[in-house]
Length: 224
Image (cartoon, rainbow, N blue to C red; front, side, top):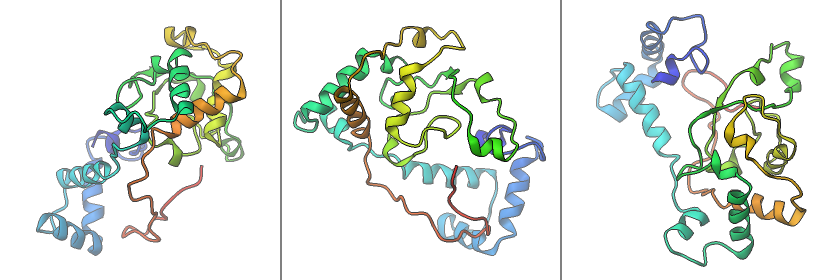
């Protein structure tokens, strides 16, 4: 629910934080199909902040998968990762990537500042880009195979591009983790191994389909 209330995530600045959940509830109640869906899920047509939160949480839980090749290897299946993948995993750790992308979700969930290049589409739209002056929470590396483009501005089109970004990284926020980062003189074979390992953190057993329509009438999907 906090994401819905945050002005820098989903709320924007036209509705106050105190009012947003009531406004959302009223908008959804006024759409007959959402009332019907609420009845199917909860047993009546009530739509409120609690129901909205429960519905979003149920959807997010449907995206959790735990049988990637890495997960199988971590649970004891020594054949789940090839020699290339193990080399990529070892290099990932040795290079310092795990300093921020560590733990079960491959994130320290901390805020960091990165010198990401301008997004040309934002420039064309006249959007003021202040991203490099702000810090962003370390994203999980889970299921990156399905979430291009990368970085907080969507400027790296492929996973390989995102990896190569760290070849010439600066450290504007004076982060201790980034100061210790060492990705120099890595050959293409090693880069292949790192990329393959990150793909091995993905498990495609979830619904990746994008609906043609939604009850609100908004256009599903997106293209950054």
